[in-house]
Amino acid sequence: MATALIIGAGGVGRVVAHKCVMNNHVFDRIILASRSIGRCEEIKSELPSGAIEITTVDADNTDEVIALIKQYNPSILINVALPYQDLTIMDACIATKTPYLDTANYEHPDTAKFEYKEQWAKDSAFKEAGIMGLLGSGFDPGATNMFCAYAQKHYFDEIHTIDILDCNAGDHGYAFATNFNPEINLREVSAKGRYWENGKWIETEPMKIMQVWDYPEVGPKDSYLLYHEEMESLVKHIKGLKRIRFFMTFGQSYLTHMKCLENVGMLGIKEVEHKGMKIIPMEFLKTLLPDPASLGPRTKGKTNIGIVAEGLKEGKKRKVYIYQVKDHEECYAEVKSQGVSYTTGVPAVISAKLMVQGIWSGQGVFNMEQLDPDPFMEEMNTQGLPWKIIEMEC
Ligand code: NDP
View 1 (cartoon, rainbow, N blue to C red):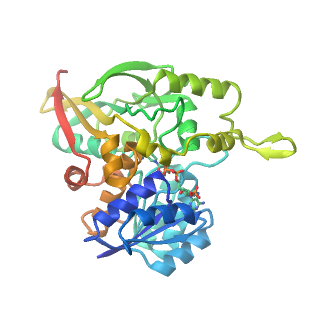
View 2: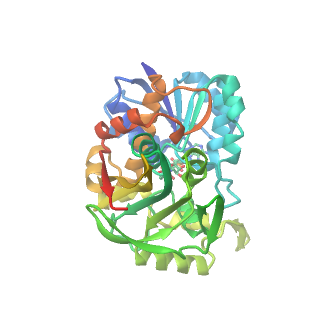
View 3: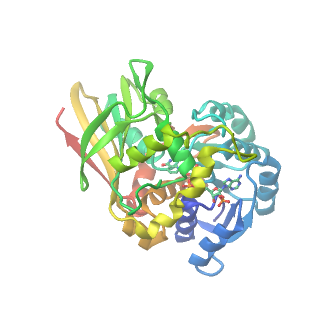
């Protein structure tokens, strides 16, 4: 039996807490810690009495996280706070020899740029501490890395191209809102696009490349090329890869609002002075926008996230599409969250389960595709994220 310490009580934290409770044959003690107690209390009230314990922590402060870990002595720490806290939490795990898992790579609050460099640099410290650190175990990154590893293991000798396709066809009824933390979401989608081809990164203007993709169970949607973090690790770990791209769907209303906010400076992450006060426009915007956690009861429609891989098997060309479709209302009925938080939180719990059961083991810092995809893919089918695979014409 295992103790899970969850840090972060946002949309994803709620799903992780609910799902850990549903897996209480594995996690017999569950602690949810976050910056403010209000969200933790709300989540606790949704669960059976005594199912979880709650407390506060400022995860920007390594010593506070170390003290928290020493208090509960967890078998695993599941970090679903914000990407800004990844390094401080990883340091606390190294100091206390506690296995670590997150869903998003480190970002510095002052630079809208995400890369694995600083987390990979902790590999030797994780090895010395004799613990495993698993990076990016949400859906994308996370399940998408597993889809690639699964394709590599069972369907190809060499994969030449991968397109990761992320479609959220949910409708929350607001003119503009983000499905996860607005600051993180808007930093990601307003950044320049980037994809990898023949050993080089190619940069594009934001939202410059669009293709229409016909998503099973959803239909055709405009899909825009973005940079996304899992590509950085996949180019290292997928054999024979020549090109990898990432596409995400956006509706016209979202794009028009975003462009307008950007044009007037509301996506800025540098301080500006307003009536003698220093404010960061993006943080102020976050205050104005609907809380992603409040979208749960209003969101209808489906998500469809997957990968299309093309390459060679026994000398012949092959192309496969692996994808997962999830209904927002079904997610809300199960765990009181919309589909984006659900599809992120469930993979985090699956990985935590595989780690504490020793099905996945290792010392150092890992990306998902470095681990055996089979047990993860099996768990997806039973934990609420059933997936499909189809052969396509080359
Ligand atoms: P939210 O903003 O809803 O929640 C973040 C939570 O972290 C809040 O409860 C917040 O506390 C807490 N928090 C923030 N700072 C600190 C701190 N210093 N110490 C302790 N707690 C803190 O975000 P989401 O739940 O939507 O996202 C969680 C993570 O999941 C993010 O890293 C996001 O990037 C990632 N993600 C990954 C995806 C994937 O597929 N891989 C997809 C979607 C999200 P408070 O309540 O006080 O604000």
